[in-house]
Image (cartoon, rainbow, N blue to C red; front, side, top):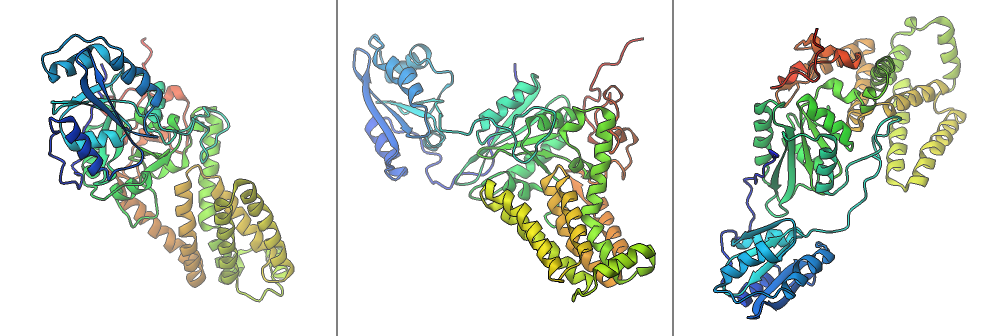
Amino acid sequence: MSHSSITKSQAKPSSSDQTKVMLPTLLDNLNTIRTLLHQPSDLIIRQFTVGQEEYPCAIVCIDGLVDTTLVNEQLINPMLHSALQPVGSALELLNILTQQVLTSFEIETGELLDEALLEILSGNTLILLDNLSQYIIVTSSGWKSRAVEEPQTESIIRGPRIGFTEDLRTNTALLRRRIKETNLVFDTYQIGRRARRKVIVTYIADIVHPDLVKEVVRRINSIDMDDIEGSGYLEQWITDSFLSPFPVILNTERPDKVSGALLQGRVAILVDGDPFALILPITFSSSLQSPEDYYQNWLISTLTRILRLISAFIATFLPALYIALLEFHHGMIPSKLAFSIAGAREGVPFPAVIEAFVMEFTLELLREAGLRLPKPIGQTIGIVGGLVIGESAVAAGMVSPVMVIVVAVTAIASFSLPSYSFAISLRVMRFGIMLFAAFLGLYGIILAYIMINIHIVNLKSFGIPYSTPFAPMFIRDWKDLVLRAPLHFMKKRPQMLQTNNDDRMKTKEK
């Protein structure tokens, strides 16, 4: 039997009717529902009678949120065509309907008014009987949703082509398909005073550290706002440091990435209506790792990770290094290269720092324009725009060809990083480091590098230092850091997570 549980957030709806119970009269209940929902045009109320005594009842649901075929075949038809014997009371009729007549999978009963309204607005169907304050709730949600497709932001060469969708149940099913484990827990919360959006916290009960789950739940229960419109809202609310440019919570569209994190002892969060899952806690190295690293040979994966690390350095420091060498440290440039750069810069009216800022700012404009425009046009703008503007700027003598090369290499390096959020962080820091280089040269770059490292060492992700496994040092976790060791060497889960179950594979008996 599954260990999944359902828990509701401490945030309560703003309605003053949240503790009221249903009235015993059918017409009074229907009028109350119409009034509280402000007479919506998409509210469906179907009144009819059941049994030989023609007992009055009604079905209430929202058009567009329910599966009409399910409602007709599993609710209305069985109730209309059932030859029920005379019953002594409405409560007896309710028991007969739930136990013998209705054929739906999920059936619940209740009597609180606000819970009935929440179920209706969640796409479920409400069944009311006359002379009874209790009601029946049948799960019948069936709104239109996007089919399971390949992730748009995390493409890989080798691996599954399945990504999360906006439907919460589809996402949980994708995880259950990958982890057929009774200890896989899905704790459900309703966040938001008005929207009451469903949020699921998932983990493997016998692996994850209990204190990590408690801290996640505490932060989620602290959310007090009208609605969290997506995983980005939730990430900003529960993050450790809102002032840090580095992401301390990883977002992903890939179920295989989430399942791998759960098996390591991490926690994942799913938000209804959002195709991105949140993984926590993470470290600096988590943003440089990709699911594809585990589908390829360990040598290839290790070389790829080294390439990503170099790319992160290039994307952060290359323009600043160019500015520092050109403006302050000419002697460090080889003579032939110095003459070549001087010849290329002949006639350029701006200093290197202005030149770099103009080109980087233009590149960011092109990148944003490519994201916002339709896909066929966006790709054309990114490629053609960069070529045309770069060539025109060089031909006009406003920038040097070397600067165009530096900016282009920096852009390519930032595109090679698997985490979009992490790449944005490096783009933000790049401009600050360029200012340090413009004023202090290489000393400014070294100072900026030291400040970044101090910040990383002091940053935490749900109690785990962001610089782990370097500081504090966990030598065992270095097997899956820059080096991706062969799989049969990684017999233990990450030591930094302090999991309850440390073994991830069986050891061979001698």
